[in-house]
Each structure stands twice: as structure tokens, then as C-alpha cells.
Length: 319
Image 1: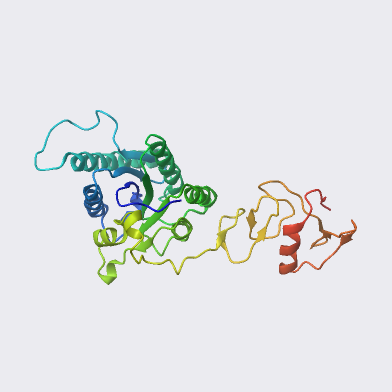
Image 2 (image 1 turned 135 degrees about the horizontal axis):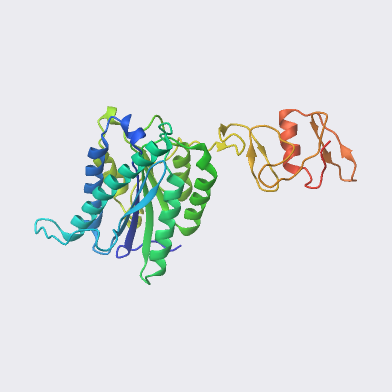
């Protein structure tokens, strides 16, 4: 991909994690975070008239597009003190967040489920990539897209597969994924990997060190593709690249990989639950077919089982 030019427009897709359970444990109130985020969005729109914006919001049960708003959803009243695009974005975001929080609260009451700090980040990322693809195909001008995720919740292990698919899709499309970890206990392993793989920036707002959300957004995420070419951006040296197993959805240090579909398991399994490949298992040992067709049994240690499982024949039978 060619390098960005100063005259090229930017497309910023902001993903807001507004899970009420996660924000209830945050030292920063959701209302304050929204106000600071809106200031950042207005600063982005003021940088260049050609800049484009999409804002998504996600809870544990739903993901919606807040901006651009549907036609007729914003009143035609004028305020000469506010730039029209600022006003439209501010109203759409605030009203959309209120409506989505009310919907999420009603859905949780009907379902009578326990509070969860997980949000549908993978769905929001997929929706963001759809918006980017649509806007790219509707213009002949060069547009440099990026996604900014404001995360407040914790990683949902069940989202690992779909989230990784979205991350690699963004990488192929040349879309940067920036992550601002606003709340939640610890860093997000999945979003750290998203920023590292796509070439984006991962920053955590540390309120105890005197950082503010607005300061982090302006100094860490306002720069576009062209400006980033001459900036020394914060690195992601502490990124955790451990994978999540497909069987129990937990992060593993050492796992077993299916040689057919590359699914990862925390324990040795005779049948891949993803592609249903069968591996030869005899008496607690995994046997790999020898070159002459005869079975060459090997003691089933963790290292040996991992090696045999990744090379076992898909036509082997179970005993």
C-alpha cells in the first residue's frame, strides 16, 4: 500500500464500549467519558473538512450505529454558536447512547441475567469494517481508515475466534485498530493483539498517574496516517500473544494444534471439535503413521503428543 499524503482524507470509526456493569466499577463516570470523547471527535472533524466519521456503540447484548444518524432523527433547530457538523455528531452520540442503555437495561430485566462486563466488541469491529468497505467503494478519492476502540469491559473468551477473524480482516484491508483502555481490571489481551497485528496503538488510561481520557485521546490517537509517519508512537512491547483454546475458551501457554484447521486445545483430544478430524489414539498414546505405513508408537508425553497431534493423519481411526 502506498504512503498517505497530507491531502488525503481520513475515516475514523469510533467504537464505544458502554457496558453499564463495566463502567460502574470505573473511577471515571460514563457521562464524563462521553463528554471528553465528544471533544476529541470535534477536534478530529476540525482537522480537515474532508475527514469522515462513524460512531458505533456496543453493550453486552447489542451494537448500534450512532453516527451518521438516520435522516430525520435530529431536529432541524439551529444554534449559531455551534458548527453544524459538531452539533449533529454531539446530538446523535448522546441521544444514541441514552437509547442504547435503556434498551440494554430493559433486555437484561426481561432475561433476568447476571451482570456481565463483556461487550460485543467483535460484532462492533465487523460492523466497523463493513462501514469502511462501503465508504471506500463509494468514492474514488484516497481515504485512510482506522478504528478506535474505547474499551471498558473485560475480554470475553467466547468472542476470541470472531474477534481474531475481524483483526486479520482489518490487517488485509490496511485498517489500523487503535485501542484506548478506559476502565476494567488489567489490560485486554485480545485488543492488545488487535493493535499490534493491525499496526495501531494500544494505550491504557491510568487515572492514578494523573492521566485524563481527553489527554490520552488527543496525544495518542488524533494523528492520522500521514502524521504518524513522522511521529514516534507508543509501542506495544508488553503485548500478550497467548492464544485461547477452542474447547474451554481460556488463555493457554502450551496447547495442542489441529494440523487441518489450526484449532487450539488446552488438552489432547482424539477428535477435533472444529473440523472433526480423527487422530489415532491407542492406550493413552498418540500414534503417528510411519513412512512405510506401519504405526510407530511413541510415549504420550506432553511434548510428544503435541507433535503427533499436529501431524496425525485425518483418516486414522480411534481405538
